[in-house]
Length: 502
Image: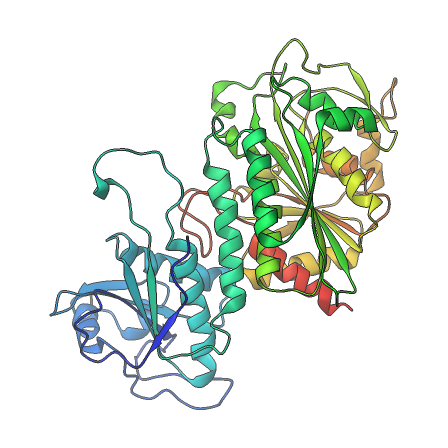
């Protein structure tokens, strides 16, 4: 759970109760004499802030000037035993860089398992707002503890942060949008880290059903029997290898009376991916319980949009299944028929994500949304192309792709656009079906996967996010855990861009 909503307090003077304090400063020049606030034209002469004397001693010992600590948080124990961390943020830097330095500063405090953290914000009127938002969001994101099955002494695991006290700034809405984003991100990460013997398709579906009831979403569940009858042969091909056949496409519907636009969110929810008959080696099967991350992002984004009360109608489609090996599992050279009638030659059973998404996108397209966005940990080639610092974006509208890139820059969840021109389609030509599912060579597989998915969106404006940044060792941007929840903050910004386009 997230820490309680922000408590606002006056300036910190000689604290007796606070044990863990983060002092957030705007960037000053290297001489420490102050710098201009470009928005107001005023100078910050002789900057004063909590713990300045202690920090100056620390800087002197390190032969550093105040301005030289930008990007490098410093920590020291105060006379009363409190731990204080000072961090200087350059607001002219990209949001990702700002989030990273704040997260690193907070981690110095969170390592001691505090129950409460005090955030002291300094700067001009125009600087304190952005700095407070950075600090509060990072505290909310990193304060909770993700599910763990460790046993033993209580102090072997970090304890969750339960309180945040803010000094130097007060937000009229108590940072409602930030809280919504943090809640959505936390839900995404909590689901993604669950072990596969717990987060089975059956459990996942029941969890989503209960969440829908609590949030007021309409819920519909298409199980394998129903999908087989509907002709969703691509999804069924993947699901039929599991025992029991507990896979399903789950549809969640959020309606807002005043909304004039609708968005469909689609997520790949493979709870475990063995690779099927083309079995993964152990090295690449490790961590495949996280192959449902795309569905967790879509669900987390729906929760965030609901809590933020965005005036959008949203349909969320979760393709929940497993990719197992069994006598009934689909195999190479099978030809299957999708929900929209396209016949597909199976080339590799470990390219199952694009199959479950194909029928799920077809279902979503039938509702005729204004925009469709799908999320998936889809291809290894995207990870090869970008590593885990960025996620890749494809789309069938240039203006949507531009919005996606803008949303990536401003949210701190960075995206890179890739081509999917029609001539790539030649690689997927089949002699016995309408299309191949993929190629054995694997060249440009992230692009070929996007081309394949584009067959099932029925011309609706569409974005596809290949989540190469779903996991990054040591954290990414504002998030300090390996599992990042990448896509929720980006998605909120993207939904705001879609609303603005009205």
